[in-house]
Image 1 (cartoon, one colour):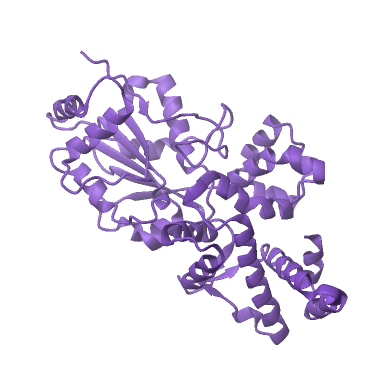
Image 2 (cartoon, one colour):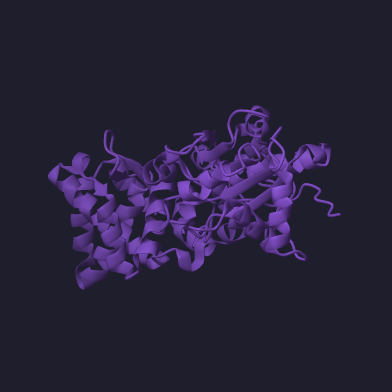
Length: 400
């Protein structure tokens, strides 16, 4: 008889502090400060009645540790009372599309068989049918689908999730999803037709205590960091980036918000690999074009009306990189969810560069102009800076 002690079934698993990246999740790392899933939330998800579908979203910025809030909670519960946990399956959303005619029992069996050696899908399908034969007192299986926003070419997640709440599985399977807020609301429309409806829970940035613990763990004195930089590092992904880059950045100067922003896209490329385009150079050229547009708008007194649409960004990124639609949609998600743009109030599809990104765009536009000016660089510099003279933007450009 198989001992099915509750376990997380996944390719690789590290549980710990938010903001350190792993193969399964957006973030994870060595044992340390962890954000635990709120017990009230968990009881509602795993109770004998009520919500069976939970989605973890971010507070408006990606990289806050949505996945590891689940896994840190799971690790703590596993250590304290493992028999209270259902069989837990953690799978990345990328590539997870159930064949249209595959029964839900078979779909779950396939997921388990792919992760547990020694038994095939037939064995696990029979086992699941045995587990779900009696009326559900509480879920026997917890399926965590991580990163819906990473599968940009598939939005019909209802067809994957809804069958797991029917066909004899009612009450037996609890489902937890992680997704960026922007993608969840705009692209997936909050999967509004799911029954039961998904219950969104927002993961916030680091608290002051969490940030202090993270800095102390990595021996980074808070006094060496500006308040502006600390505010950015409250987003766990940026905190992790700053710590990762610390030795390199210290060799070339202080850790600054400007340097973190400049390194941002390169870091995203390292995380996503071939699933993300354009390259860092292409992305910086895109920013330079926006900086040039913004500088012209400032000169004409029209910068308050300047905006970008999703279509504008896709076309501009594609013209620079030559990338195909899937990689460009991933890039668009990274830009919108990744603190590069703000929505224009009252519009779901118009955006402006964030205020703290504007100096980089203007600086890149200036560098491009100077490269093209040749011997006339001094005159071109004076001409470029004229409408910015005496403004914070003019000063900020020089910091880059």
